[in-house]
Amino acid sequence: MEYYLAQANIARFKAQLDHPIMKEFVDFLEPVNKFAEESPGFVWRLKDDQGRPASYIQSPFKDENMAVNISLWEDVDAFKAFVYGSVHSYFLRNKKKWFDVKGPSQFVLWWLPKGELPTLDMAKEKLEFLEQNGASPQAFTMAEFYDCTGHRIAAPLSRLRMKHNSSE
Image (tube, rainbow, N blue to C red; front, side, top):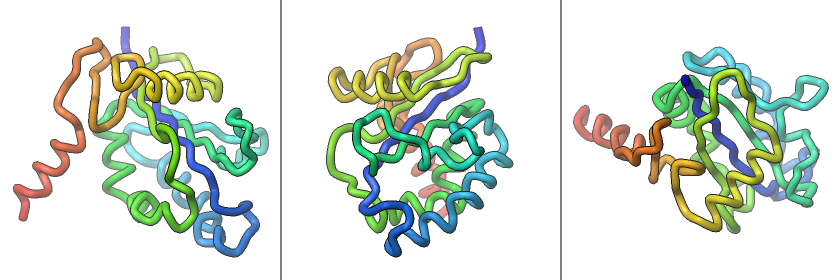
């Protein structure tokens, strides 16, 4: 069986999307999401019924300021290249401008058989599982990574740092 890498992350907005402090984030939602869709290895991302970013979808976390992002990638290298090696990294580094980063697990990865799509409920279950049980083949992080056969492997971020350090 073949698998794709699913990711979900949640974050609580500091304000409603139409608030002035959210302007930079909102202005770049579409361009960054378009860049993701054009990135090598991108498979799918959650959108609302009108095709807008998932930030506009009602959160299953009973908090109207809780944003949910879910996407599907061919493999960890494609995901990592987009998240840490593209314009997206600016928003990751500056997330404290727009999000309250305190609280439970905000990011989870899992393998999903090709042909299936992750759902909001699935993402919520994976985040809760990770929070309650720690990393495992069912739900994991970039720091505690499992391959699609369930084996723990060297963290992809460590490999990224090693490559970066060796090029200095």
